[in-house]
Length: 159
Image (cartoon, rainbow, N blue to C red; front, top):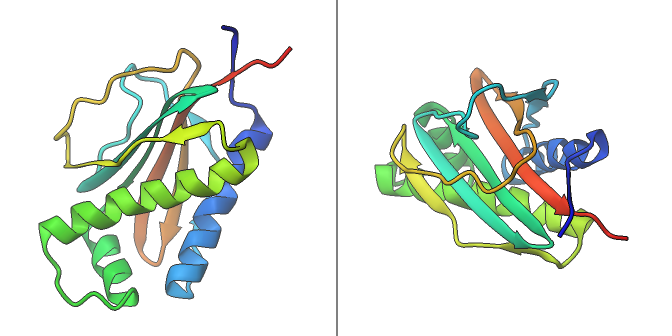
């Protein structure tokens, strides 16, 4: 099969998904900054808590969301969750990665198969590199916090 790397339009889909997520879930928008190519072999930016979604179907690769404890504390509060535990931080990091991937599915189509999230604390999981193309980091701030969405996908090239 022939695959292609992501293009700027594809990256924009993920950037818009970040903005939409924070606006809808917390009524406070995130400020999405310019995406850049990750220049290291591991296709994730580690933070306090991380959620990774591996994808397949007409795609190969992963989408990861990483955030500091403070951001996730406020997101859980905005969602009405009073318990601030590592377990809940891991759950919400995985769920955010899942929601952002799900929004991307609307753009890419139902062929984007999304696996169950893998959640981990900083540097806590081995994430296999499945895509051959470059990984793109989409940094964003929400209030005083910085978080990252890393999109490392190859898309099947239709003929």
